[in-house]
Length: 476
Image 1 (cartoon, rainbow, N blue to C red):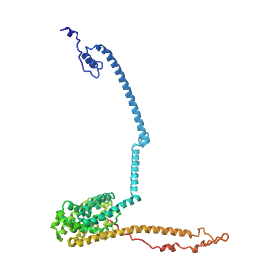
Image 2: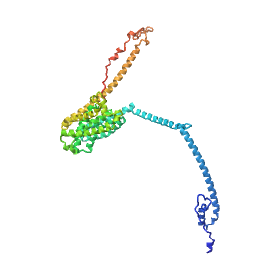
Image 3: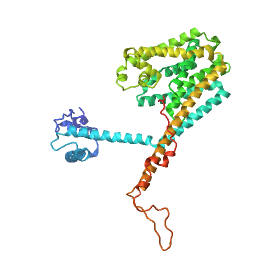
């Protein structure tokens, strides 16, 4: 070996350090490697001092870190304990000293929270139903109803080919609101009625199957039959400020108006609705058969969904249907007729009667309206006039009853004031004079005046005419 190889000290063997062997060689593995790589440097002799300083400060820093960690844990524990105490005792107060009433107090707090939320919702509902909000809402509905009527009249005279588009637009706006309102009021079983079923079929034919003659015949007959006659049967009213009445009138009158326009006023309807090419005239038997088949499909679905699957809710009074409402309407012809039938046969009798009623109301459309433009116009005018008449009766009744109540209150107030002024116990003033001044001529004399009192039944206020209005039937 050369001298250089002899003078070179052997490199230390590096062993991996273990967690339990802190004093082994592995602890100094990095400094030794650096020492071996830089063994020819001049400052290699300072390794022992540097390593000692590093070890000293590392141990001191580690000890300080442990003390800070323990102190921090103690502070966190105290803070968490204080927070829990304040949170439980001062905020919710759900824990007693022994901790036994925690579930009960928690339920109480939850009930209080629910009560506050209910009160808040009640307050919002009351504000929504306040007089100012109701007046504003009724103004908006009134404006929309009048404008829709005006636009319909303008389109009918200027562009009848847009009537079915307006029909669809109004339905997209009104029908979802009707579903929401009726669902909220638990009236949504009325949505299974024939009128909604027919309107849906109308839109299917207009936008999806305009080349289907069979569907057109069924829609035309049902629209001019059951839907149009419902304005008379259900006393639909043209009351512009009432959203529910406007929607009901739209459902029943706009369908026959649209099909009348398509049949008699639409320019070249065969181009837009190819089904009309095959229907220059209606075959009465075929038309009534097709509409009866469509009607029977609806009736079977209604019987299964409402009268069978949801019978318990209807019988318990939780839900109202057309059948239950007509049955309880003892003033109506249908209600009186159903009350004379045994309970086990009422449903089938009602459904059979509806079918017969539907066929009878379709006869004018089959034999007269489809071929006569003038008769169709008179028919639409008559149905609309009935709704206007019902609406006028509604306004007269509402405002007439309001004026009657105000007049009756005025009568009572005047009667009470007259009785107090003419009562014997009231102080009376005798004739007075003061140094030649004239005597008060209109002062009642002293003494008993009971025989001069006018009985309340003989008051002149009774000469005011009685403006009472008879109570009308319930409107749908």
